[in-house]
Length: 277
Image (cartoon, rainbow, N blue to C red):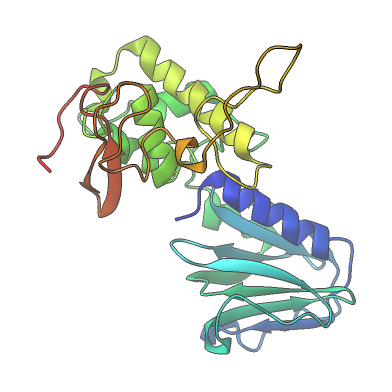
């Protein structure tokens, strides 16, 4: 499932291609809205709310979509060949005079009144990349069920919106806690720092083509030796590094499922319960 920074990047691409222009074609390929036609309406903006995308058009309407595991929006210049999947996977087409946005495999696609957007996203906790970010509320939400495993609490978008499975694993590593540790057992300072770090990570990666959670390589200064080039395998602390040495201590990283998602952790650096694997 895409992380909040990826969804924000998608919103920015869609906004840049569609906002301020009139739709020349609108094709929503879901039964409930198959007869809806947005052609002739101007696109006001495309915004991200957590992992949700909101395309607002004239007339007080919003096209709400969610990518979940493998949905995608692709933007093409007029005349460019569409790439993103076979035609039967297309769920939405929005065209202007200059660009076409094509939604592939979208599991959530609905047209609603803009004034009713809260019906779709009102359940979300504070948005890590949104203007209404509230770290105190996010922390209270996260700790509201003390017995809940930390990894599950971080993924619950009702607590704080924008964390996906990659950030879940990376944040648990940075907190030196396994994803199965009851969230209420985190030291208060660690819990507060976890929320702050989550925002810092997503903000740092919101415009990057490649997500990095480990320390960035600093630019060369002075006449000293150049820093060792970063290898892509070193961009993340533990996610995707099963059986490879931990970047901090060298212990092989372990993996197991948590809530049907592959989860990675270092058995030496992170304390707390963990499954045998």
